[in-house]
Length: 336
Image (tube, rainbow, N blue to C red):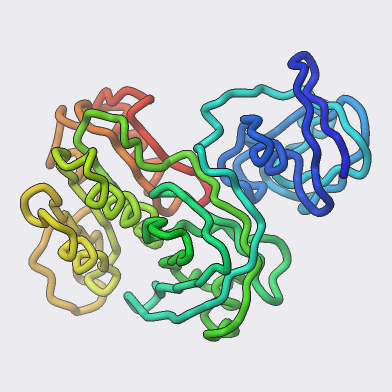
């Protein structure tokens, strides 16, 4: 164990062997900033004032040469080699109420949802709570470093976590999941994490916007809304975009929810209807365009969640900004 002191706050916490500064802080109930948790976004940067750290990913894109020159390190990638003192912002907004844990889970089964998205179902030995929309870090066999994937179910008894994962060509994580992982295999988990979880205290109706495997956290939010009696009066607009008809999935999952077609509304859209020869009678274009055209200025009256590829996420952010949606009503974890 090494102790980490946060300068100027009077706060300190212990970091267990193999853990990182940011994750250990969250486990200790101290809200250090984070988002992707895999070294890409840079949200978790802290200034190392004293002590030594070892980086899980020295070339992580979330840290540039200027940061290194100023003594900054990525909290999500830095394992302390001694007691340390850091300068960092602390805020309760980085705490979700679910304390992340490290544990093992066993693959129960899997099924294909589309030509490149597969659902994986895991069983836990002990219950671990999470909020709809959160994600976990998985240490996959034969893969260096952890991979972040969102849960698609709701916690329930906490003993089953499900994921809907898209295989990215050339991706090591996808290769391990799709080719090497079999029912009965055990995977190391760390979670839950994520700040784009369902806000049950919001009085507003809900909008979910997703593309690709961004489907998973949005399905979790839809299921969470449907299962929570406190949200019985809320309406949900669910927008899902793909390139072609064969990329679209999720409608059957929403159709299984109470109120589908009345308070749960499904809006699929494709951007390249001519590309695969499959018949498509629904809307065409980009998912952010459909959301904007469907709700217009009414977007400002909704609690909005979105997840998907970076280009889609950037387009959604621009659309919401131009529509005047308050930032406090927009929820997105930048790890895709």
